[in-house]
Length: 67
Image 1: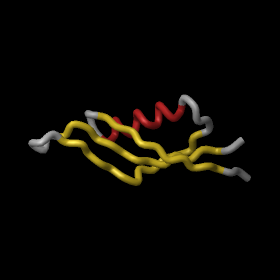
Image 2: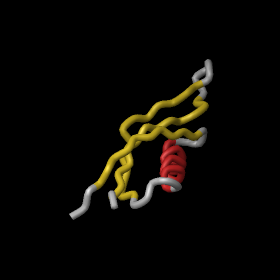
Image 3: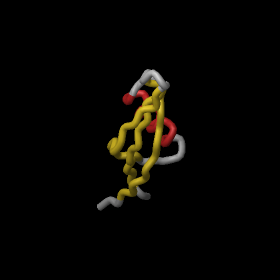
Image 4: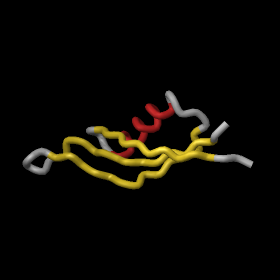
């Protein structure tokens, strides 16, 4: 039997959604062990005044197994 815990985090990237998710997971993996999965629950963008996308932002949840 296993127990998992869920944490929520935000990550961003000027390149796109996938890069923001990858960056968030890589950063979390430095301190969170036994990650089992993640899901994106919100996507936002930051724009310039003319509508040009400056940054993609994701809020996601990561679950990991508790020792």
